[in-house]
Length: 147
Image (cartoon, rainbow, N blue to C red; front, side):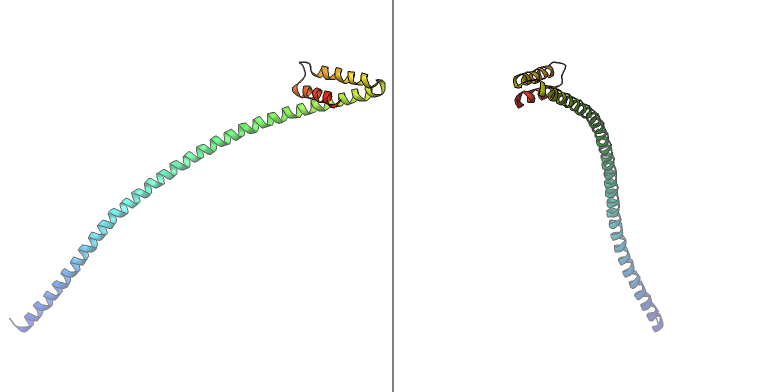
């Protein structure tokens, strides 16, 4: 063997050693990549599960909001009905107050003090009848107490 053959074999051995070294490093890098890939797949699966749970939660919230909206709409309808009833009762109370005012003004100059009280009692008794509302009965009670 000549010197140039030794030299060529030495260079080939060095290249072979460098190749083995890089192959070993590549093998380790591929192993890490495979482990990371499985971890990444687990991460993606967890993310997908979280996304599905979030979507289900959003649907439940949407259903709850719809139910609450319907309930509020019913309460608004009931409030509107009560508003109409209260307006009617207020108007009726105003009419009764006007009638009472007219009766009291008419009775003052005509009747002496005891007869005036009797007129108020008669009107109060009229308001106590069963056809009168609770508001009218309360008004009669207030009239009796005012004497």
